[in-house]
Image (tube, rainbow, N blue to C red; front, side, top):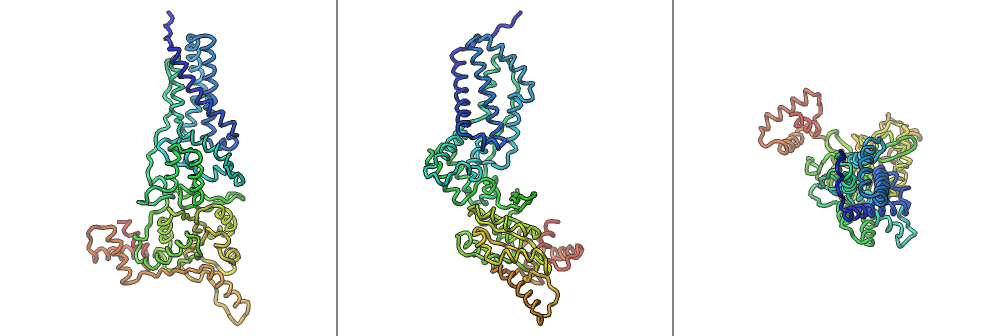
Length: 484
């Protein structure tokens, strides 16, 4: 006995399929008419999304034609057969959705700007100047290309792909009477900590978050253009909006920046005895951020006394004002020219940071850095200053020289010339005797509620002796409290 087919509400069905088809067709028409597959198609999320839309459109048109030509009964039979065939296809629409859902959940380049991961991705893309650069024509004062593309992309922010897909499945389920539960896109929890590189604790919304929030409100095109261009004057968006620190990476002949996912949260208030060093560093960096003359910095002195921590504190203090850091190794000094080219095209301000800088006499690294710093580094890239740490103020380890020989006198002058390229030298003295005790008390009060100084300090000295810390420093103190 044949099972009785359900009756369709013809009018409701027509409205349902027409609404969904109109929405999908409009998106696809704009996507292709604007030539966006060439640019957006390189992003896997966009490519998978529009491939899926194309599949849905084709299937909706087929089902409309079956119903129109053969009637609702044949449509229900077709839906059942389609479902049984499609659900087993490796490249079918269900597989396409699963790939799309997986890709958007793992996306890192554009992170949590909106609770909906699709909207978050699109907003991140829109605010990334590098991603939008194909549509920015400096010779077009009316921004016609940018207006069209921006209008289209912002319309996608208002679309929920999960709703589109489940709406299609609701339609098919009428005849198939079954469907798998598709992978959910989920939701993001949006908070300040998701944008470590563009905001600091208690600093309120970052510039990137503020822009994304305004663009999500469906502003007019003119206002959206004004907002994004104002943002791009001081921000690149993309990874420069999400991260504050980067490392320099070379793969073959290509030199790129790789983001550091988590930067140690250090503030000057967490460091002992840094008032003088903090004052000099912050005064210099504030001039730098204002576009005024600033100096390359050499932080030198005793090990473990906060040289590297000062650099991180500086970054954490001023990252919300567009300060970024690029860490490079001494062995990468030959890449300075490539790095300058990358950074000078960006609106942010950069510290190029080299830890534990020192040279052997006649080393290639010494000669290369000296040649690169013959002029001011700020002239080479106006948005860059160099900050290096070292245990000695004299960066070159040199055998005793006989200054009666002109060649050796010349070598001394060359070494001094390199040192002089760091116009701001800041000394970090060792912690000895009373100062070490004061430093110990500083960290004890930050770490413990109650303690007996004499017994705890004796425990620390035993720890230092046992671990062969012949000259205990601030790092020794921190390690002691971390090990308790």
